Length: 128
Image (tube, rainbow, N blue to C red; front, side, top):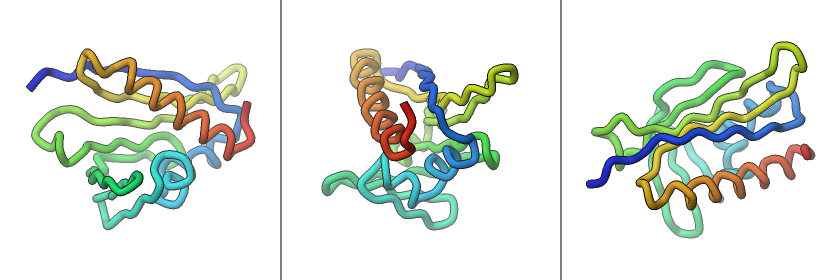
């Protein structure tokens, strides 16, 4: 199996950090922009898209700040994906920081997927 490469992305979002956190950390919030449906049982989340289903384990979260998952397919690895809210101390600008992993030839595709999903999120939040 090919090693995956870590990549990070930043998306400025004009919304309050507390509202954004609701959309990145709850099954109901995530099912509005990230997947067709999201369920959770304890630390396990199930993400559903058009008939396919992926399970992830919640690795950790800090209220109002970040949430981190590992796909169960990657359970024996260090791979994860994290959604983190960053607020500029001076300007108070809010950004959604995304950390993810992909195989070398799939990074562009992964970034495009995140761009599309975050674009949906911004539309739902009424952000530019």
